[in-house]
Length: 253
Image (cartoon, rainbow, N blue to C red):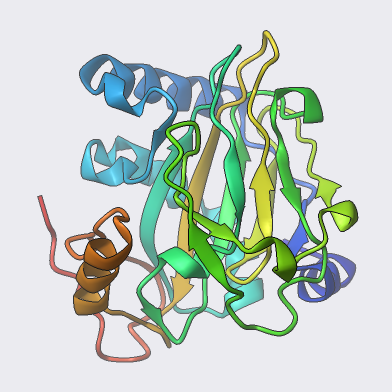
């Protein structure tokens, strides 16, 4: 469980690194699942935006009761997992992720998601660890983004340079198995990996079910911005109930 100081840190800074670590055997299991994924789908060598669409074996990680307890402290007891992704960032050339806010990509109304970021390898500034602008979530608004179609980026929507101050960035360094949690409006990104060490990270996207996953909006966003189409993403109710009564938990294959 998060203590009061950690909850306050999340609310004030937009992120927190709790006193928690995934067990070594679970980490090895994740690495094995990822190796299988890359063998079948080498196009995801740098980044897979939709893990569960290809292997629901990753779902058991999202069902971890300790992780769900921490998430519930931040977004409430009614929780749906709507996506999981994998930023592989291999050694000697792993792609950068531009400065962005997660909510720019996501068809959720109202916008509300807690992302859990799991370090599969040691994450450092040298191999492109996550960097954040502390407190940038407080206005709870999406800042202006522009399309950046560079093939060397994992994502194609980048916050306009006038919307943030990179000198305020803080690096989130993690050991294998450590996690961080961050808010949907937090400004963050990461540099390319030019080191000899990989920097694999798995993300879990949890939303409170007081929000609604809008499949029509997902399709429109995909068409307008050339984003991943989340319109047939399976939602998994992992705790509580569908508080909105409007979410579609149809299983898509």
